[in-house]
Every structure is written in structure tokens, then in C-alpha cells.
Length: 366
Image (cartoon, rainbow, N blue to C red; front, side, top):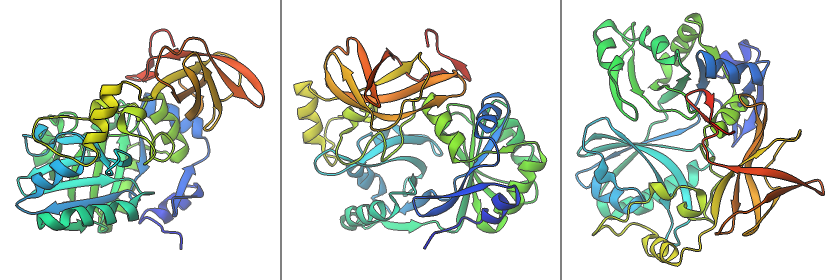
């Protein structure tokens, strides 16, 4: 059965085109995906991300549990409210999911995991938590709205209770805080996102979500669908689970080696495999591609590089750049000249550093 977020009727009232996304009935766009993309880059747009799974961990050994569960070091979180991006790995170093962890207390952490991986994530987390006597609480009572763009923070700030506005205005990147809305609704506001733009992700009780969404619309924040979310995140060089990574690759092969912390004395799942792969230096690499010819780079296309044959992971037409871009996985070694097989024609592409867009502007040389 297809699931619906609490904002489903709101999307339909706004004329959204709805699609099945990982078993959820979600908006792909509200008319023009390109306009939604540009509005986020230039002003402020918002996304219903209530399909994401919020999991709260409670217990005296919660930190010990997370030291084992994820590849990044939870010990980096020293200030309450700070967040950490990381991967959850299986015993072979394969990526079960990528997620964000919020440190909300010595015995309280919040995880936000992907919608499409909900069932396997919860099964893995619960199985791994058993020896640590951790309470795993799924927060289906919360909705979540991401507000992104250069005007996003000011738009949200205007809907926060006057007594809390100063604290939210000072909130640093990858940090969070519990506050109230102007009408008293509890809000969990995090300065995180998935577009490459500044902004907030706001979690709040489902009973208050429609009113908060409507207030954002009234404040001039443009609703945006999954289509714009995908082009925005790829321009920002942000990976998508299932397309850029899964259990068949390690973080090193997903372009996420920077999320691996091989700190002393911490035996996390898959560590031995990652150490061996690092020592061999043979992990496949993720590179950014730009195609100057007309056309679109798409998932699954064959990539021909100097180091060997690879594949396009995420590919799309980038509205900010006016050309096609992609992330691709190719063998280790110098890429050399690279071509992509598009319907039997080998089209030359350029290897570039990603993100392709930073602070709303194309990177130099792209």
C-alpha cells in the first residue's frame, strides 16, 4: 500500500504531479521543475521530507553503540545539538545507508535515515542495538519540511517564536535546536539540507505540519518537488542512496572516504575491510563529469576512461549550468580522456572536481 505524508492533500491542492517514490505518494513537481530549481538557488523553496525516517536512540550506552554502528566517529560530537553525516556499514564494509546523527544528550541521539531503506535500516539498527540496551524509538509522529535557498533562513526565522529567534539566527551549520513556532508549536530546527544551499530542516508534530507549511507558502516560500530536489543535490555533488551507493560498495568507492574515521580503539562494522582496501589503494573512484555537447547523462550509461570501464551513477541536465553533469564510478588510476556511451555513440566528457555548483554559482572551469 502506498504511504502518504500528512501534507499529501496540501500538495494536491497546489496542483502537484504525484509519483510513487519508495512506496510513498510524493510530489515530483508543481508545474515546472526548472522554475522550482531556480527558485531554490535564487530565493527560497521548500520540500516535504516527511517520508524520511526519524529514529531516536535513548540509553546510557548510546554513544558506545554508535561507535560500533557507523564509520564516522561519533566522538566528534562534543556540543549538544551538533550533527554528523556518516554511513552505516555491514560487516563487509558495504553501505547499508547514509544518514545524519544529532547529539541531543549523552544518552539521547537522533538519526535521520532514508525513506527507501526504512525497513532494512530499522532491522539492522535494532539487531545491532540489542547488546547495548538501547531504546530505539521511531518518530512517525513527526513531519519534516526542508526550507532551502539564500532567503530560507530569514523565511523560517519569521515563523519562529520571538523568544527563540535570536538562538535560531545564531545556529551554526550542521547544528540543531528545539524551539517553538510563533503559535507555540514545538519545532526541531537543524541547519542542514540536501541542495547545496543554506537553510533549515524543520521537524514538528504531524498535527502542526499543515499549518506550518501554509505559513511558509504565505511567506513566499515556493513548494518544490522531488525533481528539483534531485537536480539541486546533484549540482551540489551530494550522493543518493541506491543510485550512487549501496551494499555493493564501500564509502571509499562511493566518494565518501572523508566520512570514514579510523580512530584508534574503535571497532566499527566493516573496519577491517576498509583498512585493507585503503592499504591496497585499489578502490574504485567517483569522479564528476561535465558534457559540453547537447544531451543528458543518465544512470547506467557506460563510461570509458583511461583507467578502465566504469558507469554513470547519478546524471542529469543541470539547470544552473545549462549542460549535463554526472557522478561516475571508474577504476582506480588516472582517468585520462573519458567518454560516455550514449546509445552507441561515444561522447567526450570532461572530468571535473565536484560540487559542480557552490553557493548558488557554477564552480570555476565548469
